Image 1 (spheres, rainbow, N blue to C red):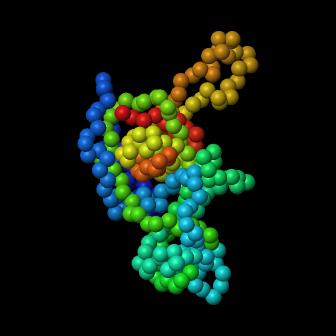
Image 2 (image 1 turned 60 degrees about the vertical axis):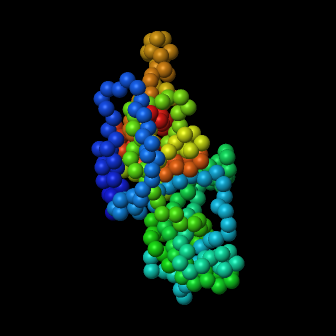
Image 3 (image 1 turned 45 degrees about the horizontal axis):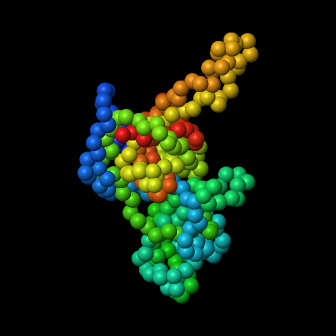
Length: 278
């Protein structure tokens, strides 16, 4: 159900951001273009559960330790009362809310998170503290994006917001192009309406509502050259980029952002290029 709502959200936004057929200069950015508002109720969970990326380890030592049950459970879901590390000594109080998150690692990759090895951050849901003692606390699961696992880390809950309106413009900027990164659960193939991270953030001038065109670079794809002319062989690695879609920034951080796919001609993959629309 959450993914079907995301598709609808993407389609509705796409209607509001369709570029003009002809443009000579980039449209000016309105003064309130960066105003943030709560997402529509039917898109709230999709935005809150969207992936992000991190180059640093989580701050603090708040972790999921288990569940108040007679047995050991590796995965918690709504209805469970979970136990987390940290209590009054960590400043926790009944009623506090936290996101529950974990890093997504590719097979065999234990490096990072650091500058050279950023990791995708998966949001499993958010919880509310029920009871607190000195070193431990109990919590209820307010919303599950996925199963909550042992050793997932906690981060303060901040209600999600989105741009009040898309940033206008229809001219792609090809200087310093970025890349598509990782989708939900580490997915490397992204469909319309879904969320994915990009390697551009506020340090690169990105704001919520900013749109990007997505391109595929085919120059390194293998092409059969046996029996072909020298002209073909020389020029075959110089074919232009292929436009395959459009994405819009939902949330942004210093060095990365989360975007939603608004339109696509083909599946969008990790590593595809993006160019900001101005």
